[in-house]
Structures are given as structure tokens and as C-alpha cells.
Length: 169
Image (cartoon, rainbow, N blue to C red):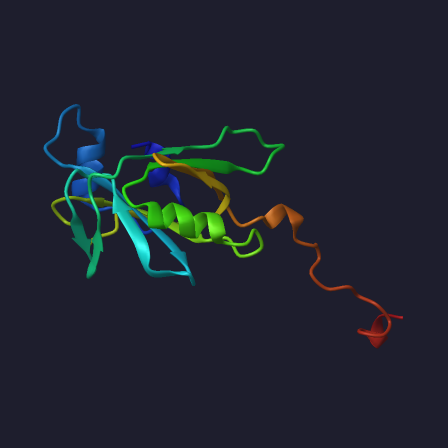
């Protein structure tokens, strides 16, 4: 688990227990990543965790034993950060649904970090992404997890024209 997950300014402060486990050379604590994939055609949402057993967090069951890899982006200031998700497939229904989703309605993906001993306490996150360019086959599902594209937003958001602001003339 990357320590970059600790540095999200929008995330709550991680617990003392989590910080202590993160910086110890050896620990009995198990850090678990929770991944939720949501879309209108996925009911209920797909929930998996990085642990080998199922985990219930805040009333939601996250299926364990589903290996997935999240590759963090390069730190290139010139490009939009993209995170890569690679997940082993245990249910072909998920691949079929993800492949049938139109490109203009991508699924939402939420990543959270908890400790196995305290699964109801979110230590880091939630990190909200959009799943783009998803591809799947009989064994894996892959795609890009895109952050909100703030670089394409117009700035300033409003135009100051004589029609909208007559006092500026």
C-alpha cells in the first residue's frame, strides 16, 4: 500500500493505529483496500477487497479473494493523472456489464483504505474515480481510473460581458 494514500488532503486523518502500523517495520495489522464499482446497470454495485476473506464495512460486504492491482500515475505535471486498475474476474457478469456500458456513461469507482481489525473506520479515502477504457476477457478486467478532469474546465467559469454585467461598460 502506497503512503501516497495518506496524503489526500480531502481524506480524514488516519487513526493513530493506522499511522503506527504504516510506519512500523513489522506489524500484525492488515491494511485492506476496498473497491466499489457503481453504475445504473450494476445492481447492487460490485464490491471487492484486497483481503483473502470477505469484509463487511459500514453494512456493505466486500468480496475477498479477488486480486486487483492499482497502479498509481507518474508524477508528470504536464499530463492528467491516470490510475490503472487490473482486476481478476470471478464473475463474468461484471465483465459483460462493464463492456456493455456506453462510453459516455462510465461507471464510478470508489477506493477506500481500512484496517481489517476496524473495517468500519475509513483510514484513507474515499477516492472517487471514473472507469474509462475498460476492457475485459475471461480472466481480467482492466481500465483507467480517471480523476475529475479539472484541467478542461473553463476559467473563469463565467464571462463578464455587457449583457450579463451592464455595470462594467
